[in-house]
Image 1 (cartoon, rainbow, N blue to C red):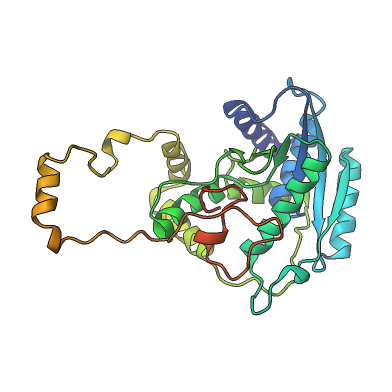
Image 2: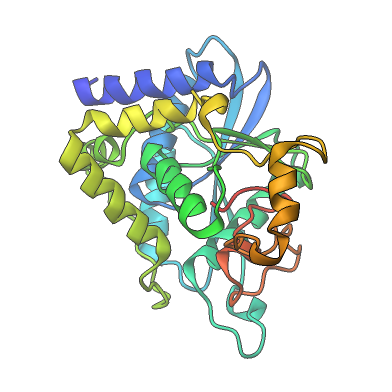
Length: 300
């Protein structure tokens, strides 16, 4: 095992133990798109299955759409066979889900695939769904929710859903995209390429650029310090609206100047609703639709 592979393995172990991601006897369904992230995760979890102190069962699942590349699917299947990892394909016709006048986009597509994974997991008695999101994804989501929704939230390493019995886990949480890219190059993984033609510029790309700029200015350690900060909120030094009594100074000031005060706008509008089992309208904004299938969850 190379030094880079050892690094990934240790960081995945850290996430598994830090967040208690897997319990004894769990059946884990791994969402395998075929990209660098999910392939790297599949490689390491399939190896850990043999010696990890907590025994678990692992199966990979690929949601196959009309835009999937048959050649890439064959390569994914060959890799899983070589790792001794069972692979199932879940067929899904995306275009039939698009409502008239709507246009498909990337986050809507990813949510549709996520729902199919959860449905399959529920039907086949899987307790955990493992996804290949890494540290950069988590930080980008944090920046997105601040700048577009006006809230401090992000995608969680372990997420319990309101509408599904399964728990989503993200074992790459302690790994940067840079680490995963280097490992994918070392292993010679061929990344899955979407052929839908709808991949356009997104808000997430803007947040990625902002994160890259910050790391470039502050050094590579800034990324992990930012991630550590998500574990260490100092609530005393976060702004909160007053909850004092009606006769306190703040309320008196507010009453006196009521005619001149306006409520600060809440960016992002209403709280995100849960995904409709038949799929979210692809034209909805992230604040309304990018809600991970559980009501009230942050944009991911």
